[in-house]
Length: 489
View 1 (cartoon, rainbow, N blue to C red):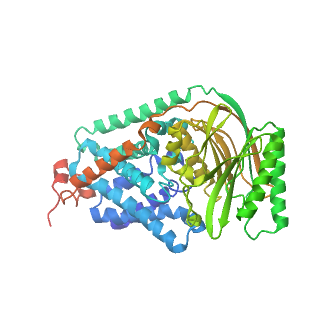
View 2 (view 1 turned 45 degrees about the vertical axis):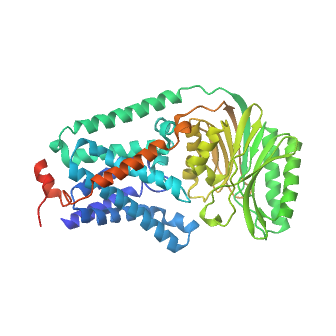
View 3 (view 1 turned 60 degrees about the horizontal axis):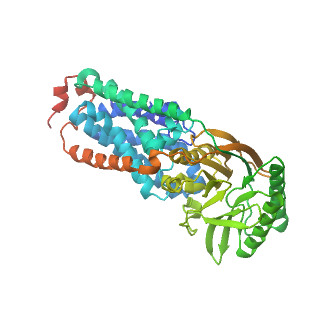
């Protein structure tokens, strides 16, 4: 029997590799946790812990190579262990509630625990809820619209509710009284979310047409770069900007950290970009890193069509390799034509709180220079566009080692292209920039998530105790009364 459980955990772990990786299979996310929950309900508490740990470690190992790109080995192993521990805690806590109470309402335990954990991660961790399973649905637009109501926590609740209901059906069937209520609630919520999504997607987008240009070169400029190398990079950017301007671009976004430079070099680059903006009569947003006497900042410049430096934005949230940078605190909003535009840099847009702050400032579009890590280009771009859906604005992003993309307030990708090494990549997109769409999420933020935190604390409280902890697969073949009264030692 133990061997069969191990075999099942290994197979579940292999399945999870397609769910928790950087490009998850969207439809599989809805079903993959179900066999893990069934295995938990048919195992003892102790067995559930180590079987879940085994399955989770196998699944999470899919991201090992990516983590090694951004962290030392010890940190990678620690992160993987902590992520596996989270699965152990959530599945174990869910099992305690389900096995102890065997009631239809226990279908909510699994989604409540996941949303609670996701909410705490989003507000407490330096990398926020990076990689949340909710982002796996970014290309399923009817589902993604649910984030305009309740953020990614709302999408995650739906994602966890379905496998929770299926697991109850598979493990207990008719042994739980009124279990049909769990199925009914699940079906109603899913149908409501899909219908809401379809209706929202049918809203017209009407606004001021703007032509955006994006250009990116994967190769960056370091402090020790030679003059010849720097000149080669800038010749390519100059050519991209000239070509995009000739095609009608009005706003051009270049990537994050085109180079890491000193204040003296920064002045030279400002003058160069100022000249380009005035010469082609367009707006240019560009990212640079400035190193001044050991102090590092990650900056976005915005140049107006008359050549003036209209704004300087300082990045708030740093990726692991740049934790020594000084974070910014400002939220910069500028008028371009008759619309308000916000400025942010790369990882900033992975934080729902920052995206919502711009929603509260009623921006119509975000200009986002970025620098990703190649392997995470899909995930990073979808996390970024989700902020637009949550708060009803367009997102224009130009990334090194990532994607050049424009998405509308509904998360529709109007156009996208992968970045490349020299001579780089460019993209031209015409978009309707409408007034910001009001969303419930902009108004209430993560309040539903915090309610799940409170609900999770309540469930953990009522789940304490030994009753039902030793129910096994053998017990599941008998009556509910047998399950409620486990064998005594």
